[in-house]
Image 1 (tube, rainbow, N blue to C red):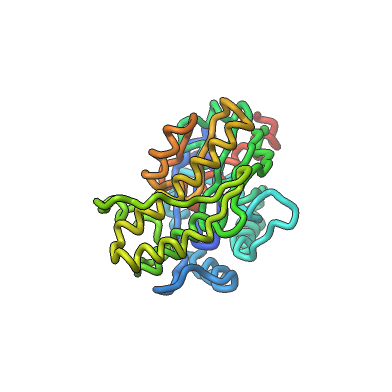
Image 2 (image 1 turned 60 degrees about the horizontal axis):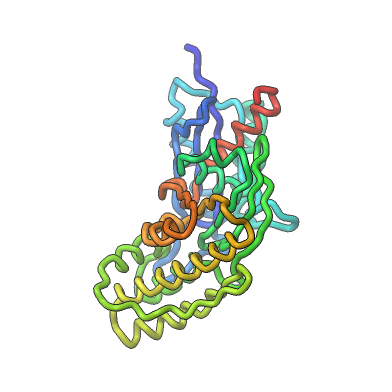
Length: 322
């Protein structure tokens, strides 16, 4: 039986062990994830705990990959995220777990291994899911990477097999996902709190206090949101109102940052990636501000699909197929 050649991607972020498979045509055939456990009442994981959890998750994930491959597909290259972003000194221990797994697979099967950043994987997955990948891969575009670990504004120049990324804005303190999780845990939600907070916000029927945001030259401050939301929750006793306030605050902040970005890069498409950007309220807000593109939730939150696609593109370049 002739097996179809495919590409395997692996990503080990701070909260999800992920693997994905794409075919030679650039179609994602499997997007597999195993979440890392976070104790109730806590807002995250220490890196040592994340590495341990990835190590425990990896056999489970590889079994899922084996099932997805079946008798029809065989990997010819493996891609893995090894750094948070493409920048000097960018490092998190949790990515060592994915790198070790990918290295073992490649050594055992004599396959090439290609390394990428977690951020570039997010961008590539969002491009794929947005439906505008072919269009945006041909010219520079702007991107927001908004998650629990990152709130950055990027100017992205596509290359043959990856991206050149320049940071042109971001947060001066905490990230948007951190703010959401801290408020959510304060209200008794289970980490990660984004989906539950969005559901709560949809139940709100009260007038939302006008958020007092802080954005200067494309850089935001989000650390005050936790205290403002906590005060509102104590005074109102309303979880839906507080959740709606949090999303309004982040929505206003991202809107202001987008407006500043377009002053610098007018008429440039903007891609929104990262787990926070799977929120439908935020997507609706930003769709009215610019030529916006969004990923579906499965490709917006942490995933390895973008790494698998980048692996395909790098391998085709190396083999002279571009």
